[in-house]
Length: 314
Picture 1 (cartoon, rainbow, N blue to C red):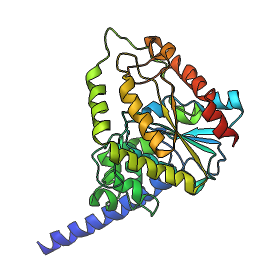
Picture 2 (picture 1 turned 45 degrees about the horizontal axis):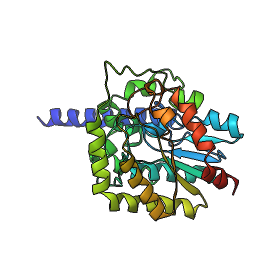
Picture 3 (picture 1 turned 180 degrees about the vertical axis):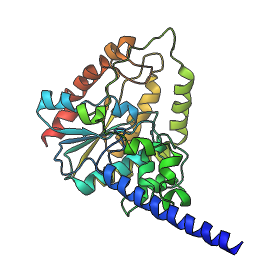
Picture 4 (picture 1 turned 180 degrees about the horizontal axis):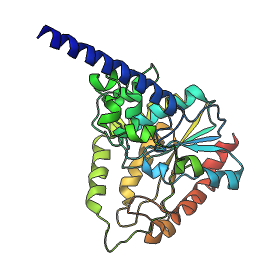
């Protein structure tokens, strides 16, 4: 029995050492690469951008850096993270950016009644957790914020390869590297045309978000002001942008609540929900997201906004 336990112990030690070596090799291999696009915490380095875009998929799939380059001759980067409407993770993402890049002139965050405050360590939003499991093992001081945000547990943080295996990331980490759409064109362009017959719009989900935004108004406002303070500390002008939603779920009163919050916080707000955009389903991939028809129309609204023009010049 003692021999068996001794051999088992030795086997476990060997497995741990081999796993640790493989984990180290994989971590080095993918450290400065992005596997999905939004897991780009260390990909964006030593860049001098005029604008940084933050937000959920309504940012990630909408802000086209090429449009700003071609229209205004300025550099920008889209740091949106799909599935995350909470301000907390976008503050974390901005802090990563500021650690490795000079501050931009402007930060544009997609901000509307679908956003929430979120928390740095007490939250339940684990969408795309698999994307960020690559940062779970032995997190450095910088990565502790993102690891804590996603609630990676003790085993995920200290057992080599465990997180990569659990979240099905191991194969992608060792396979032939292919550039993501984000690396190629700067954002996740959506060429899909919304089939309103097969997938009709639903107001119920939007109404739930509208009610939640009002209910948690104070906490959302506090977090927004924290983001604004972070920007001010780095001499950055924060601008909130209400992205278009299809007319069937657009509620002006709900969007005016966002305007009220920004006005009270002294933050510029741009509402891009123009009738010629939101009335036409051909501009959407679904009721919340624009497609390649709607994106340039929306970007054009932003660059022609007088407050945006003034902030960019100052």
